[in-house]
Amino acid sequence: MEKTFSQSELEAIAAALGDTSDGLTGSEIGHILATIGLADPDPTMTKWKRLHNAFVARQNHSQNRRAILEFIRQAMKPERHVKQPERFEPMRANVNRALAFSGLAVGATGEISAVTRAETLTEA
Image 1 (cartoon, rainbow, N blue to C red):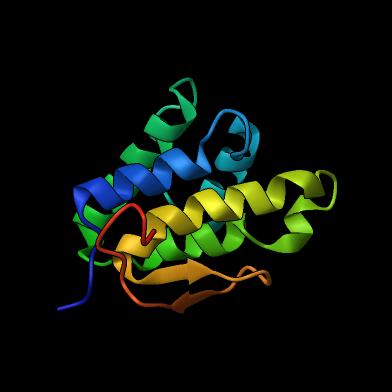
Image 2: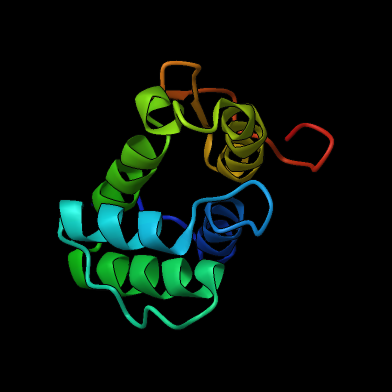
């Protein structure tokens, strides 16, 4: 059986990517969802809730986390942030705090790698 994210991990990842100040814009979210073939639940919804609902629906359907990891890879491509490079590191830090509890991290190149799984907020 493939790995899946827990409900709380999905919520933290969605909140990090949809953060009001350091996260993706609504149009970026829509574009990435469409690019990787994830259903967009409701474009008028709050950004993090929109992502959370899309992630939950896909993971429940596929019983794996591959599409969510692909969304993160697409969102964290450094070239996507050329126009606003100042938001890349804060977004990456937020996403990495969320991913730390799954034993994953996004590197400076945007690639996801395995790391020691965090057990506490301090470790994350």
